[in-house]
Image (cartoon, rainbow, N blue to C red; front, side, top):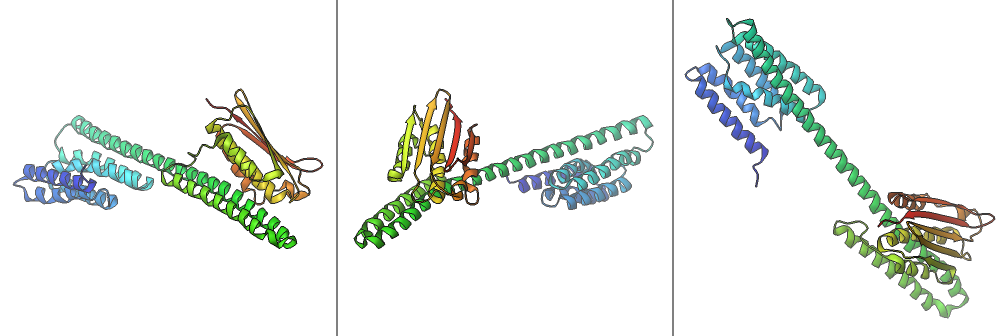
Length: 350
């Protein structure tokens, strides 16, 4: 197991403190002033601003009090990196400015008597180190922010896909149950003896809905979204549940992956049909696979303006998102004089 970050920082701080005391001995001021700067390394992740403030104050005190540079000064670039990585842009720029000022002023104080060329070269080298570590901290932060943004986008897409799956399963099943209940109520009022049959149909549809919901939950628990591959058989079963109100025509081979997309489109289109077309309307579902393209058409003969609506619009939105995810197109709208049609084209992927 890799060491925890704070453990590694504490080890580095202790090591640098030991080296600083070793090289500063027997100067007590050098030993004491080096310790706060080294200790700042241990808290550079949790309190980067505090760590840099302590480091800058300690480094400035060393520049004024000590006759020569301390080994502990190596902590300053690390503190600049830490502040830029774990703090905002403004604080990062402030830390860069302070560190660069120290890179210029420090050699001037410590190298008194040296040639201007030596002082300038030393200041330049130290400033370059500061700039490099600042840039590294900036780059690491940008990568982390990009990774976080990607993770959030993936989570949002996963939530949207889950919402589509829940909508497809629940909306269709509940719509079918509602239609059966409404029709069954009228039938039972005319013929009370048919009530058990009506309730049996509703119970069957309820069990079917529960089975689909359980299947979906199982898939989600396994970390997937749409691993269910229904194919043509599932589409036949879906249309068959509407009895003599629906007719299906399939031309060509509907593969498993393509079949799942078509299944969901047909399911949602039939849900809208059940909601809006009226109790006497019928619907025709046509699936045609020709070469590298599949076309799905769901057309009903419903009457009235309700046949051309989609409630709050979630159904068409989920269908369109699903089709566009596969590079296809979807059109939907009312027919003249009556009816409503949903047509989707999907490329056949090898």
